[in-house]
Image (cartoon, rainbow, N blue to C red; front, side, top):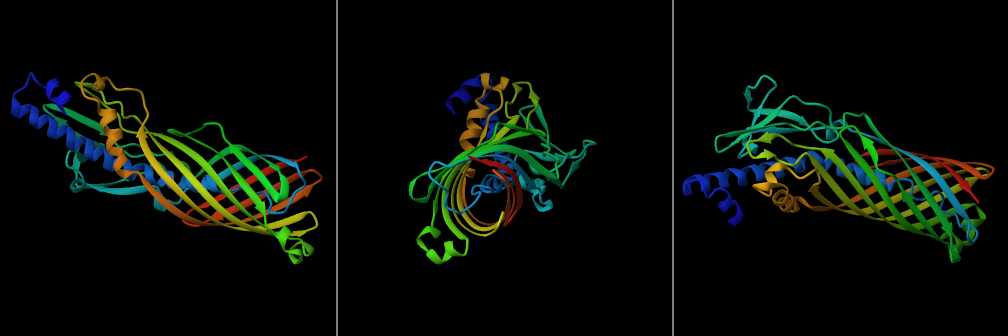
Length: 332
């Protein structure tokens, strides 16, 4: 606050106070918009990271290794592709259409949505700030590959790990990685093993990073440096899975419960305005107000078929969202 007052020390006291108020209202509006824009994408990221952790609940031999290449397909629901905004939602911005006309309300895309031609317009002192409302990824489905591997240990334990490189999306990118620990439970129930029924529990941790192009414009103070927003999600998962084997085919059903901690931050290049006002820093501090924790319950069904030492597996997870996963694995 002191720094901002010094910056505008060449203005009168009333002008400095007015300018500071305008900047404060701009930051509040940007924070509110950021939350509505990116939240559906980070919620979806939890489903993408939760699927396909367990290839099979059965107990493997000591030091058996499984390596797989997975392709994850997340289906973007229509309900999470857009959200309504009204001029009454803002204290700094007003909404304009492509013709430059002020409109009372609009429907704009989330990070999972398509394109828009609306603008957010405001003013600091005599300087107009006009920002194009950010577009979304504009994809019916989001596809990304990742590698997954596991190694069996003593007493029915198994370590699992997954990793994806940074996958480029339209106007953004996505990355997930994590590790888990599985334990076979059916080894303690002879009747289950006799009928080739397998039961196991898994705990896992995954990290999801998802970034999107956000708001940016040029002002007399320079560009604002808020052109990229990133959601960072830490997910802790507990899963119970049961399967039934018929020769080379295995059918598995799973119940997944996870807790995800969501954090948001601006991660684009430093704006020129930072020489005058630390906009990116202040906004990142304000974005802490929309940090949140969510619990999810997800069901998953999976089928796995064996070709010698190669396995092909497909799974479908569903709850609030629907996510599918296709995997080709090699066991040795």
